[in-house]
Image (cartoon, rainbow, N blue to C red; front, side):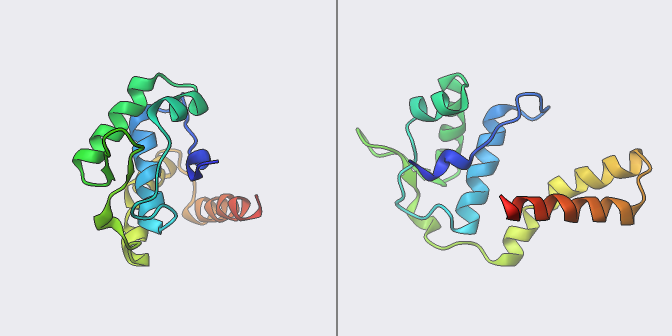
Length: 132
């Protein structure tokens, strides 16, 4: 099984599915879970796994190739690009959380959820992920 099996999509999200796929792959590369030269599943394989149209996956892969994160090999599977041989520093990875946390903070303020309660809830969700 490819390590991509841990990609999940939320069809109800306002964020397009191709962006969800891209962000999750970026995070896996940044954390070192996907390393340079590592093969990723084919467009068809990932589309079937996630039950989405192959063009959605193709768009995500093409954009990531244009960014230099993925590398196409003629007649072979795509791989994580060589220039991403090392995982990013902890500070760089943490900084990638900023947009998600800014959105969550804005929503908490709009819902008038006290900061302490929002932080406690975030800690609870974070700890749930460790136990699975």
